[in-house]
Image (cartoon, rainbow, N blue to C red; front, side, top):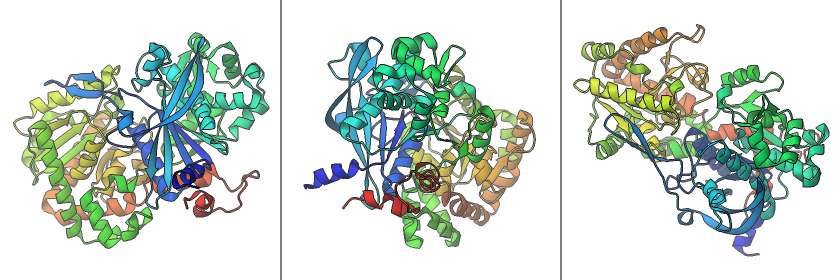
Length: 593
């Protein structure tokens, strides 16, 4: 057997299929919108590192999410962010039919291989409706990620969920017994699995036993703690796109209520394992969906991807096992503080150089830089720190100078998110004589790597309890950057006051904006800036603890291991074929020769 044939044969042994509307695999390919896609890419990179028998399925979007341009007042403009699949993906000679409304379209696929540290490869398949045999509207379904109206979005989700299962079967993936839905966008894969069980001619007759059979094969991860974040489509639209037989079957699952098809309820009803993405988020989700047992697996980030070159070199010298086993980052607690500070200074200088090239503004390497870069959404409150400009001026005069770097895109239809960007620009103008404020245009993977390693403090100010998890602060922690954050999402687990960073407000009290604002300014002036300027070694100790405590735990290697043990191959399953329980034993049979 030739090498390529051996590789493909090995790929076909995959046991798990991971579906996500967006997956970030390469900075040169705009196949993601934000945190969900970046998380998916990190997750699959760790799967490749660990040799987990998994395959990824997502959508190809030839015009990306969008390229952001900002005018002098922070008004966002959206331009196509062209993706040339032939430049980074492998075209496959496989086509599958997918029914949309009263016509059948052709879906093809492109492949990207994620190579792990041991050489194991995880294939990711990008589904493409742009085949020339399809009508122009259907071809456009492969244009924009999260674009168009409800009809466009539902058609995309049919391509992802139903088309994705069919594509896997056409490619020869017949041993898959776990289908993991990363959010509700791919929930229609449950419909495809029911079609396989019942046959497409008898969908309306699907029984509770049929649904339970699908449940044994499905995992559902929810990322939103608010009902408004759920994908919902009017019943009439669902009937027009899916057809009456399919809709009848879906109604039997309990996912249709109040005249709408709810993808979150479809994922819940058809999954045997459901989880939130942080401990608090799991609790909140359980309250939202009391009829379903909801677990929690806290998100993480891919350590080798998000650790900057200076810190990679530092870890390689002192704890060379860190790439293979991220838990070794715990031993960073023994690294000399001077070396921590030196590595950070190099990363900070690199970020400042790139900021100067992009904006024409040169920040000072000697002054504290506070970073905030998230999706621009109202609940993330990027402008909270600017609530009292006079207070900021006072801190600057009485305590010490500081600088701000911001970044993030607002969804094209999110007017509140766009207003948040403009608010930062207004603060930037008002503070221009005393406090530098920079907003990075078109924040992407490359900028994320620079900023999460190159600032001195990571700021995060979400409206509780709307932060499901958050991962930007985890990336910062890998580079010794502590957080100043509201106690929500992952920070409830990663926060140790004055050790890994600082908390805004008080978790035990009801949220009060004025209390949070006062706390933010108090911590910034008396706890952070005073420490940074008067006791730099003590500040470096906080940086080191952020690495050892948070970097060692909040990574996708730990996250993947939890999914393997708790969701993919739980030891208590009677029908499980293999008897070994260790991760290596589970995946050894699929490791390349």
